[in-house]
Structures are given as structure tokens and as C-alpha cells.
Image (cartoon, rainbow, N blue to C red; front, side, top):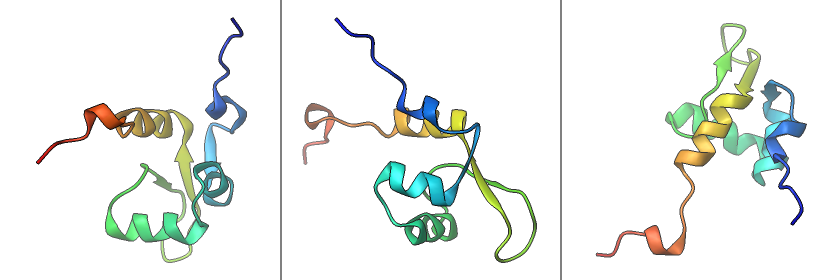
Length: 78
């Protein structure tokens, strides 16, 4: 059986939004919207102010994805 590779391992330790968006399959603007709404993956603001540099720590992203992974059987039933 082939060993599974870590898709996050191909990304740098601090990931730019322009690199993360295609990895997640969303637009870069969606990441910006999530930041404004206080949702989405954890990020680090490297420079202050509007338009400042933002990075997503790879290990935080890994934890975020793990905690938000669902399958059909884990969905809540009303």
C-alpha cells in the first residue's frame, strides 16, 4: 500500500493568501472576507494596517482543517 503524502508539506511554513486560496479551492478574496468576519483559518498579520502582509502558519492550518473535517455520518440530524 503506498504511503500517503501530506499535501500541506508542499507549502512553506508561513503561507501567503495567494498560495493558500488555490490550495483550498477558494478565491483569495474569500480568505479576506473570512478574516473580516472572524472565521476561517488562523492567520498572522505581519504588518499593521489595511493591506498589511498576512500569512497562514502551516501547523495552524493543519489543525484548522483537522478540526473542521466532517463526513456524512457526523452531520447533525434535526
